[in-house]
Every structure is written in structure tokens, then in C-alpha cells.
View 1 (cartoon, rainbow, N blue to C red):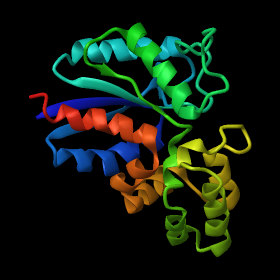
View 2: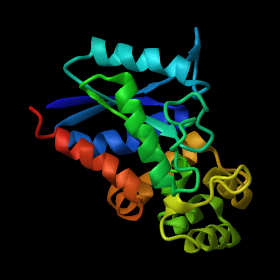
View 3: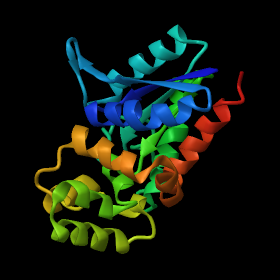
Length: 220
């Protein structure tokens, strides 16, 4: 048995972990607990700065030495004080995967705890849902919504390649096509309908992180 503590950005990610990711890995004897990041005393949700995130990660790593600690943060709109974002060799013109991997490497060095596994979603949680846009049809009751999302997905080799700009980010595209979209409710339900295996087959960076979690099953 292995435990994994996930510091997550908000309620949407917490529900995704609780309802989709945790049951999937419990069958492999990897038990996952989501923890929403704290922004100030009494308030949770939203990654407002690395200065607030780092102490929480180090505390988890040291207090839970028998567990592994990882993250679910969006690369999109990640605060500029995260390690690597202001580095001269940051891949500004690179792919989302290259940017996320660069920052994850810097996070590993900066946290410097043996049980820490950094992870950024490229570019945000909603990108995973573009794996199967037709699954939105169960909730939107609007064929045009599905057509718009399929058209957006078809323009990219992977859902993780969908544009990260403020108006074209995955969540903005979803809201434009489905104004009633509620992240904590619909996000997890659609992700569950798609399935972990399909999402990791379509999203290479997400798959790479899950491969590390897969390997934890053998660390007994």
C-alpha cells in the first residue's frame, strides 16, 4: 500500500481526484487524498503565489514522510514567482509540455524533498475533457455545444495543445460553448464518463505524471 497526498488548486480538482482518480488507483493499492491549497487563514482554493504554496508542500512532505506528495496546478495563469518562470532559459516559445516540464524540474530542485513529485496540468483541467467532447452532450442538451468543442479539439494533435491565451484557454472554450458549465459538478462527471485511460492516451503530459503514480504501486 502507498499513500499519495495531492495539493490541488481548487474544488474542481478536489472532486476529480476524489471521484475519478482515487477510485482508479485504490484498485492498485495507491490511496490518494486531495488537499485544497490554502490561500490565507480560513480560505482555500486558487494558486495565488508560490510563496504561499511552498511552505504547504514542504510541511506535507515532512509531516507525511511515509507518503508521497504531488500537485495538480494549472500551467495556465501560473503565478510568475514559481521557480523557473523568470529563468533566462524558460521555453517561452516551446510547447505546453516543454513549459510544464521545465517548471516541474525547477520545483523538484526548489522543494528538495525525496517524496515530492511535481505536476502541472497542460494547460488546465478542462483540457482533459477535450479528449471526448461528445461527453458534454449528456449535460448540455445542445448539439451545437458538442460541435464547437469537437471543432476546437480537431485543430490540435492533443487536448494539451489547446491555446492557453485568456480568451482561448480550454475552460474559456467550454464556457463559450456551454454557458451553464459548472466546474466542480460537470468537470468531474464528464471526466468520469471519459475515463482515466482515454484521457491519458490523448494527453501525453498527463500520462507521464500518471506513469509516476503507477510506479508507486511497487514502492512498498
